[in-house]
Image (cartoon, rainbow, N blue to C red):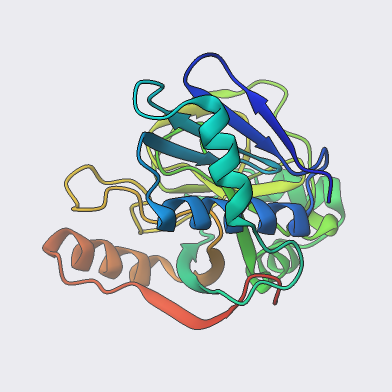
Length: 244
C-alpha cells in the first residue's frame, strides 16, 4: 500500500492510505490510529480518522513535524487481516410510519415493499468508517445496493435526534436535531450523543452496528429505561475488523 505523509498547516499531519472508500484501506487507517494512540506520543493532541486517511494534530513546541513523521512510520500498521476484535452494537430501530415518513416513497421508487426495505436494512452489519458532520454522527459502510437511493431534492430544515436515514449509498443516525436531506426510515431510542454521559459519543470509528427492528411500544419502553439510567446497551460477540 502506497502511504503518503503530508503536512496540513503548522500543527497537523495527514497520513493517506489510498484514494478510494475501501474496507481494507479503512482498516489501515483505524489500525494506525490505534498504534499512535497506544504509543502516547508526546505532543500529539488529537487523532482524526476518515475513510481513507488519518489526521494527527500535534503541538509543534513539543514535537517537530519531521520527528512526528519518523515516529509514526516506525509504528507500522496492519493493511490486511486485523487481529484486533471490534464489538458490534445492536441498535434497536422502530420503522413505524411516524418515524419513517419516506418509506412509502422509497417503496415506490425502489420497487420493494416496506417490509423488504426494513428486512434488507436490518440484515447488514455496518462498519463505522468515520465520525463527523455532527457530534456522534456515524458514517457507515455496507448498505445493500438494493436500497441505495438519492437524498431528498429539498432537505428538511429539522430532523429529530435519533432518526435513522438513508442517503445515497449510506445509512446513519442523526445524533441531534439537525437539517438534513437523507430519507428517513425509522428512529432508534438510543442516544448517539448525550453530553450528560461520561462518554458523550456512543460509538467510535472501527466499530460495527447492526439495526434490530422493534415495535413502537418497545421503543417507548427503551426510552423510559434510558431516561431512568437503567438501560444496558446490547452487543454481539466481537469479530475481526475484516469479518462480517
